[in-house]
Image (cartoon, rainbow, N blue to C red; front, top):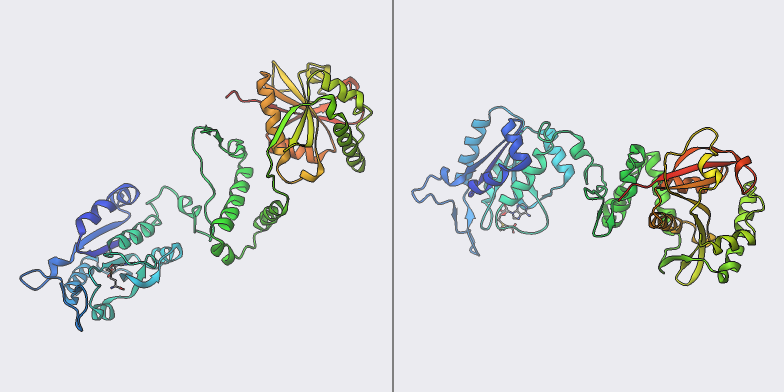
Length: 428
Ligand SMILES: C[S@@+](CC[C@H](N)C(=O)[O-])C[C@H]1O[C@@H](n2cnc3c(N)ncnc32)[C@H](O)[C@@H]1O
């Protein structure tokens, strides 16, 4: 791609376009950018490029002759190419990514004409210009900034300028969407952590998360673009459904907190346990008899039971047990724990049904991790009923890994099938 810019300020343009990605592209020889001084083509002694407008009025108008002579010289230098002469003008077609793609696809030589003052003689536009391009509905002093915008947007898409096509095909506006949010080191900055999924190493999950963010961002930041989208891809449609479902659910507006349970919480805990048991029964999950009042009293007494509050309301519970009970160490039949040393066991996690889909369970998982770290644990282990799919999904989302089946004969809490999940805590 060759770009010739006709301007009254070639030095400042060459300086900007000689930098960074575009400058390196030119050095590699995959693009050529030349800025030409229009004044050099005047035919009058004063090297005058503009004159008063016919009919009166403010300012001056650039004369057609120097522009035409400059254009002829440029065309002769460029030789036989697919050329397009473009006048940078606030009256032109609005420039965007699609227009940039059209230019890079259809032409290998662009001549960008920069006006100044009140603009240029209309007869030059009629005689020599193929199209007019505007970079927005506002008026600049001259066409130079607009020409640099077009040159940059077009040239970065010329093969060889960027290291890979994916550098620009994944960016905002390529397929009618905005780009997903980007993060770099450190993991936590000013108390804000990089989303866990981006550190998971699971490429499929990262891709899905990024696509979802693209859809969400476009929806929120550019509803006009979002309305123009014609999504047909199955994953996009699923993600859209997911976003809409999430947004139609209750939003958490009160603070969510946790504290150690006391006997005063027992009625709420038991009520929650009964509801959880009946939910599980519907899924044909047998929890045994251990989730009775005695169990919770014991958990409260040894300080392992926590309640979750939404404002002041009871919203759920969980136990974080500092334990080396037999099953925690030895009872996986067909796998093994990956951690050694101190660990905690997460048990009896339940969130009130009315908070389903609000993100409450994710917040609680964060509490569990915080407590585990405060206790100096290196890992969190979780026994989960094989059929408890929601819990397994929640664990997967928070990067807990399946370690094998648990031999129930050795467990102290009863019946039915359990699986072992574990999260090894990275040291912060
Ligand atoms: C002050 S402007 C002239 C505006 C002109 N009198 C009008 O009202 O349409 C001077 C030059 O800046 C350039 N220019 C100004 N706004 C622009 C825009 N939005 N996009 C592209 N070029 C622009 C054009 O080359 C134009 O000739």
